Image (tube, rainbow, N blue to C red; front, side):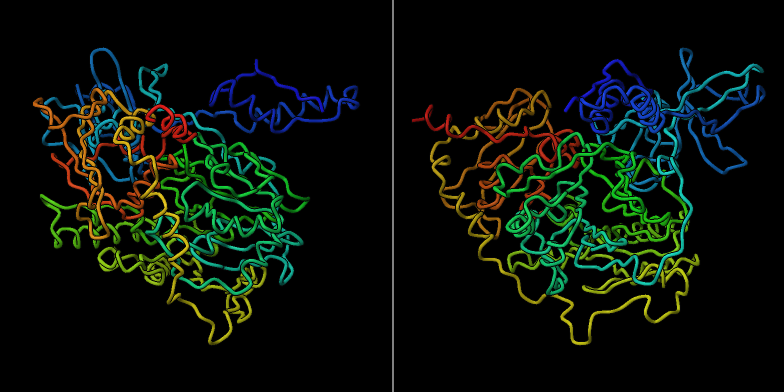
Length: 625
């Protein structure tokens, strides 16, 4: 095989490296064909470059008179024809502009009355604060940067607000929708975020989590998967895994699959942190994992193709997907906070997304200060309602023919997590669907395990009783027992590991983790099931300013967090170099912080940016010995 790498090619969005990746992914061919490949390569290269080419869009035009009325500092402006809002910051040296949309969950900014310098705005949803003079968020500190617009003067001395965007990639090589025969496209819900799609003579499965827990031992399946779930996986022609979280990338499930079909084609997006970063350590034998670039159609056969897109808030890890069969599109936004930066195809045939909320340790695992039970209950109630309204509004804007809420059917079923289960109230999918139906003509589907939607029938006649086939009467829908034992034994095995006989593991681990030069002191306490100190467990301080391990808190001013962690999970995470999502999202910690500030850089590092290879404990033990 001869591989061609056009490293000199350039593009506006992603640079040489991304183009090189795209071309390596698309152009491998037999050397014997080289005499015929010149024109072919040029055509394919142009096709690839066009698929990532940026376009310039004028979002707002200010007249010379409107420009003259701009004041120094923050200006809120609106495009009266579109109703879109923008923020412009004017100083003597420059103009900066952005959309009036918070990057967290799309809230609207207003003037921050606590800001004495006239540089920051406050989001009306969650009080995030943006310094418009730098386009950096100051609450939470060290978090995101706002996407900035280009501000240019036109010939009349007015101002243009420009956005550089890639074209909607799904519009490349458009296809007209063809008639679907009954039974040709069928979508069967298995559980949580797992769907089994029959697309002509191909079968595609989304995010198979079908056995075992997620996030160490914190999440368990709410629904009982259909009895034939494993056979369905065996029959899959391709599997899409959206991201590395264990309710989507389930190694216990994939281990079952790999027992018979280790070569099943699995597709993931080209995220900064590879989805399968932990494959070797997992021991699961999968041999056909395909990492594909964002925004490029992947052709399966003449009728079927799909495209993976990144999340605008967490592009380093989250993805979503568009599947198209004979011109009919299925949009699955999975867990993305702002899929594809908010740009999504309109009027797809079927849209599915998360809906439930509760996929975080906040605020259930927090205590002290404002975190009373009353405050938590009100916060959860408010946030769940906001999420429902946001999802309903998004569905109304995108106008899919059919909408399905999924990727939220989990439960904190272990007896030790009874408090979390009772506190962490989640949205009801029927409530969301009823809200959608009040405000739009979109059809909705609340899935049950084994239920199948026939897309051809549903599109032709939504009243057709056969368009959705429910599981047989008497089918078990909700799980009432979970096999905790095998998975808890894996975690418990770490507690007595020889590593933890040597207290210097603490320095070894946090040096390996690589987070420092940040003014934060954390107290780590190993606990039992009830979050009381574990007999003989470790209780220590980490000063991340200089990565030291003092006996007492330093005398300087510093933010402080206390993290109590169940000993089996924290030691399992430390031993295997796993991400802290198992601790935080899995509800295996209890946290206090002073002051009450979210340290984005700290948590982002330990949840996403830890090294890809685990600590070298073998070398450590030789040194300690």
